[in-house]
Length: 174
Image 1: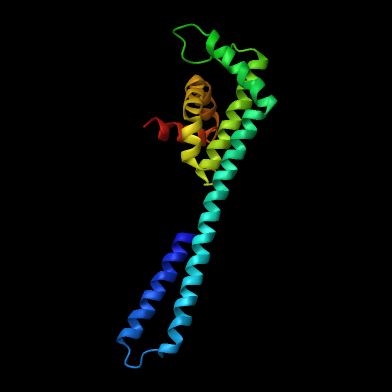
Image 2 (image 1 turned 45 degrees about the vertical axis):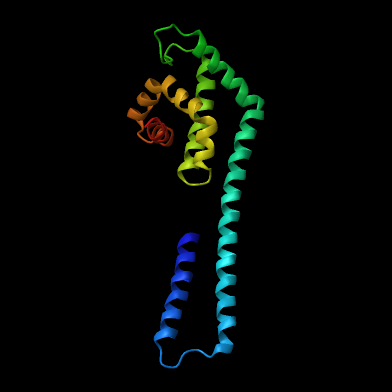
């Protein structure tokens, strides 16, 4: 939206210049510095706001990532899933949630819901996708693949279950 506003202001200034160039009675020379100054100030403010917005999104993404890594509860659940992942049979690529114990199911739901939260943040633009992709792509895609059967079963009951995580997985696997 801010980029659109910058374009409108720049377009308006260009139209103003064309009008002044083609108009038989152009603006007096003493008013040009004021006009150019106002244009420069508006564009400068908009560019500054855009840079601040981008930095804010990146900072928010970093804070979410850091809080996830420093959260004892998240790490406890992640360790449960890692244990199940490394304890599975060599031919099993997914976890069977119907035979999983209650603790593992709770951990799976906790981490899947957290991943859905991250995917929603990316989809809505609240989190920087490139930054998350570079730091968490393998983990997010591996998590989806490990729980694919469970996710698909839940989506048959309610299609919106983990819809953002699913969309993110398919986009990142291309």
